[in-house]
Length: 504
Image: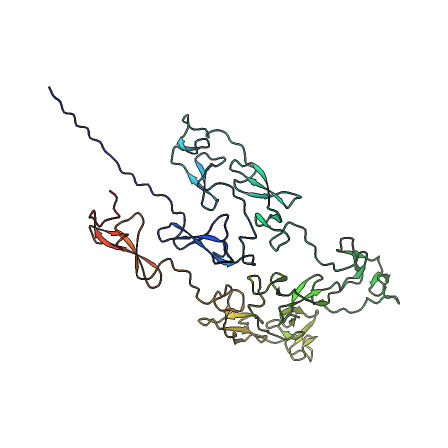
């Protein structure tokens, strides 16, 4: 008897999609080569690109910049790799998770499926508590975080790398570089990014020198062996004589200190910008007097960083922007809503709030403090609320070239930036139009596609992208029964000869 047995084999098609490594249009750095970078294409695939000659890619700015310039944050700093691209590493204290080393050697946390744990030996997720599970057991607390970089005490050239099993491995920076505890990477020694090496600042005094303390005759400064000023106190009943450099009897013949002293315009050792000249700055000396200094050739003084920086670099916040002057140096101006206070126009034409003595008010006419309710008091009266703060700069809506200045009389005055410049609402000053500091004008980013082109959509043959004239991708749908052909750039009959998208 002949028997026929039919076997029915069911084949289930499983579609596996891998996570996208990037976002379309995104620019990403290439490890170990600053001259190259990656462009994330419309289908989320990384395309390698190269900067122009003499330029490198800046990971922070996402663009090519001049090599070794202040904008170059790739050539000057190197970050040791904590892993190899594509490597799978166990996560301490959690067997159900593991770490994937991404394209830029950065660890990304991943999760095993339910009921599974990551095997450090097999480098994959296995059934929890099975004979392959060599993870599910007790773990000790970690002294650090995997991939973390930590400074080594007393040696700037070395640092520690916390490896995947949370153990510290000692590493050394390249020749001429030191480890920055703040930036967590090796940087050029003695550069602006070096916050580890001991830097020497110019000496403000001579060893053993005695210097007077402003506004306090009973105290003085002693310049120690490290050229640092230490505050000292005279004995009771004595004051320090600036001329004799010693403590003398208070109100005695030798006392040349006990008298009315004027307020200090600055703080000792402070660096202050010079108005209308970015190449110069002021150093506040030990007696609180301003000493004019000059930056090196090709450098300017940065008011924000309090140091000389490369001219026209990103750190240069002086050359690229000019700030109009709200007052004249030394001028006294009344403060609205408060007669007992007034404004002093400082050396940098900035308004500093001051206060009259008890029982006195400021006279706007006489420009001085006078007896309250006296004949000279022309302030004590009803005053209305203020719309702004004197000296404040405010943006003008719908016009980047103009802005408002709040005058000392609390009225808004419209001002105009110079040609080629716009007002920055964040920096409160005029900056170069379309420059890096311009946060007012519209900035356009590179286009991820060409207008009027059709592009296939990954993992969906029935849809595609249309690049409009605004360089933006719009999702479109083919008609029923049709799919998009990546080769022909049009919708064709599904499963036909022209169909080069559908599987099978």
